[in-house]
Amino acid sequence: MDKKRIAGEKAAEFVEDGMIVGLGTGSTAYWAVRRIGERVRDGLRVQGVPTSERTRELALELGIPVVSLDDFPQLDLTIDGADEIDDNFHLIKGGGGALFREKVVALASRRLVIVADDGKWVGKLGAFRLPVEVVPFGWRRTVRAVEATGCRAELRIEGTNPYETDNGNWILDCDFGTIADPAGLHHSLKRITGVVETGLFVGMADTVVLGTEAGVRILSRPTPITDAESC
Ligand SMILES: O=C[C@H](O)[C@H](O)[C@H](O)COP(=O)(O)O
Image (cartoon, rainbow, N blue to C red; front, side, top):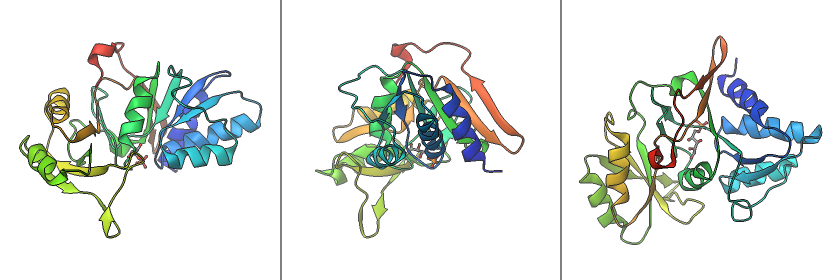
């Protein structure tokens, strides 16, 4: 059984006629976007805001009408993947480098649905190195400042060059070990000039759709999220 596929396809059922939907990035969100495309072919009327250029191309191939966040700053729902999910629904994202646009789109959404295989469900975040998007100018100084918060940071490389995000920035993959205080760490990193965004999504996910060997598990946050809790 393809756990990513069953999770992605299940989450696509949350999409209703007339919605503006955030379209996530990665190999699990792919299945959600693909299923939304099938439903569009069957007559579903939705408009999608992609979280990456890759997803924009996929949506257009599938015939999903694509709109910009600036034209539709309030989305009904976003479906996206994650690299780790903890018991409080805090996330590490950005393994695919799309974290900045993913976070902006998620913050604009009334509901964030996370799709993943059950291997992503962890007690505490941190086994997966935290992606941090940084501005290329002065990046060595930024690395030192990031490492001073308590990690080993490595510049992500693609081929022989730094991996470049859709925003023209670079990614540091940061090994903090277990992350005891995701919100505190996020705020410490955001205070560093040169850091654009972190892959910590704190208090943002409303629903987690997990693919397991036994089928799909749908988990909901027990308490609603206020804007003040999200970062
Ligand atoms: O930047 C990429 C995203 O945050 C992905 O949603 C995340 O890395 C999970 O990707 P996948 O579903 O391929 O494991």
